[in-house]
Length: 575
Ligand code: ADP
Image (cartoon, rainbow, N blue to C red; front, side, top):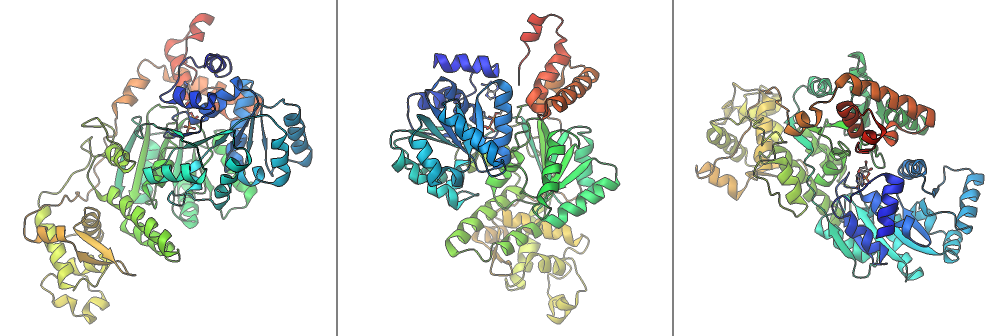
């Protein structure tokens, strides 16, 4: 471990370990298999990078994406580590150069995809090479229970058979107990040291709101982060293009990213974002894996993701530098319908898994429980704090209506009167007294519950219906998401239980987690901006992304302490 600690200081400038890093590195150092589960920003990469510097032989890192490998290898080379990669984007000459370096034993860390690793030619080369260990990044891709199953990852089970004596370590930011077990089984790990860090990201603040006026909701978040980097996720490509155009017309510097764009344009936009030529990227979930830009200050979801794993991973791209960052989601009931529609052709088993995840996600949106606590609980952990002080619920940013019991009873009775045969939109139309032809044809304008909530907007009522679904008083079934009253819902009808319904009018966000004020305390804002400009120039000159030069935390500390001697400069935190 001494050698590893020395390498940590020499190549990365770190004097301490982050939680579980020491244990994870020590397992590899002793040749033991390991599963490390740490949230994004927890410092997983270092756990397979640093031990390579102390090991005898080549450390092979399996990674699913070229962009991910490229960024990591660039950053390692910048630190003076002999890291290389092998992927299809490289010319034949470059690939030969890497292979020659491996043969000469000049490479410490090699990054490549699972497909590439498992080619016969490459396996033969590895057979002749002294190996330190295999590190499998994004290891949840091996499990069907996870949210990003990749069949090519399954083939990695061959490694154990082919290299029985080489340790295999698996790394992921997102794994429920089930996924964790499956990783061990699929990769045939031998009594792996299983290390699971806390899933809580205290530096992230969460705000989840129904989508009312999307453009102004998005703009109000962006306006709180002028000149800072952010990611905006949309469900569909069309939404990306439309939102981008709208933001452009209001003068925001944004770039689109989705799988429907040609590869060159997509790559260019990704680079513009990473190199801070644009502040914000508007994207589908095609964007993100492998982006380790550390200073993303906000992530906005303009629709609901299909699982809490997705949400945790996408929102988790904010604040990797552990400085405060904001995650906002604007969801609507329609998002649930879109995902359910997209899932309809899945095989039965996969469909059931996906639907459960979707229901959990929806319940998260519509509930009024602490967001940090809910996420952590989803991953099988508990949050020690009573009040996280960093989510809309705990900050008291959500207002509930006083007459929730009566309103909920009106809604539930209407569902009963409609013989539990209709969806949320139709039910809301009946409740608000819509003159829709279908309602008249069905004689539903004659129901006693017709127009019971006619003083409210249809969208508001529909949203409450969704909240009742989220809290388990109503459930959706069938192809058309028809509503029916649950056991819990019947208790509401009898007045034995009171649901929580959120006030419709959007309250101005009081987003002000304590950590934000603290981490800017004493920082000279003007100097910080000048240092940012310096970092950008320096990065352009070296051809690397700005965050590879210095993290925001370093710049803030420089702008706070204003070191005047090299000794003081050496005391500034590095990332
Ligand atoms: P992950 O892969 O888990 O998302 P990273 O490996 O990208 O996390 O690390 C997140 C950030 O933490 C990076 O900026 C990294 O440089 C920093 N970091 C990692 N280990 C340490 C350490 N021991 N001390 C200080 N900073 C660290």
